Length: 287
Ligand code: NAD
Image (cartoon, rainbow, N blue to C red; front, side, top):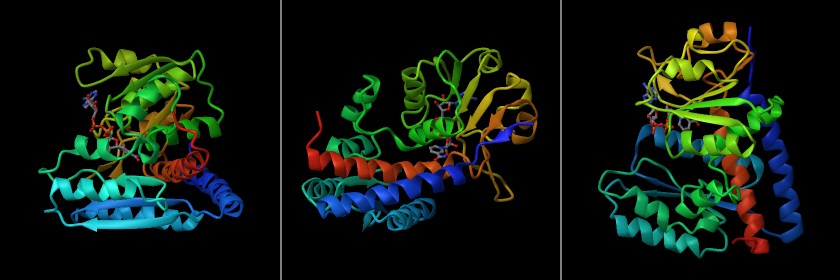
């Protein structure tokens, strides 16, 4: 039976560390780190995410600045708002909640956040720095996965790491991070042939595709570490991951549950990135 990787426990532990670090930072510099979160429109899921980010900021002593714009807002108005925040000394991190309404170009919006305040790490400069192995910020979900592996002392060096999914926010960056820890990394995606064959080789298997219960026990190696990033809502309203938890638990050494695995880590890493941003902006230690 696999051991559970408990994201709630790890997240709580890290938030305590972040809170005490925020306090030290305030005492030393007299500055409260600030995170601005922009929500465009009233999408229910996005509204909940933004609320949770706000609550998490307060919990660790980070100043949370919420900006709510109507779904009809013009792209240029949104970008002007971001430009204002770029030069606001009270704002160390800027996050635009995605997805944006269809009339707004996400790429243009992301690129308008200065890299020093891009705590989601989606700006091309930050993506490039991650590729070079010298990131200022690591995108939150992959950063959370690395923290989980670290907390449970999972050795990465020399291990077969297989990532299923190649999105810019999870698949590609987690592949890069595992590589930077000397894993032997394979990235699989919707056009991969013999996916099961690749998955079965994995000592560490990361699944981020958005397909409920896609990976089952027959697709994994006994003793594998299985990280389930997927968040899917079933017909009965319950959440499920991309991994069939029951069959995988029988064979894996470690597995993340959904909910309660990777999910709680993402916001925690956003808090960490905001604190990193505040520290770097003080020391001007960028570039
Ligand atoms: P995405 O939706 O942008 O892309 C899906 C990826 O999966 C693509 O690269 C595609 O090639 C691959 N894929 C799709 N079908 C496949 C198949 N049958 N076989 C192999 N590969 C296949 O991906 P995303 O944004 O990384 O999201 C993936 C999942 O992770 C979603 O369920 C999302 O909700 C979840 N997610 C969770 C968190 C979190 O905080 N826990 C954060 C981000 C995303």
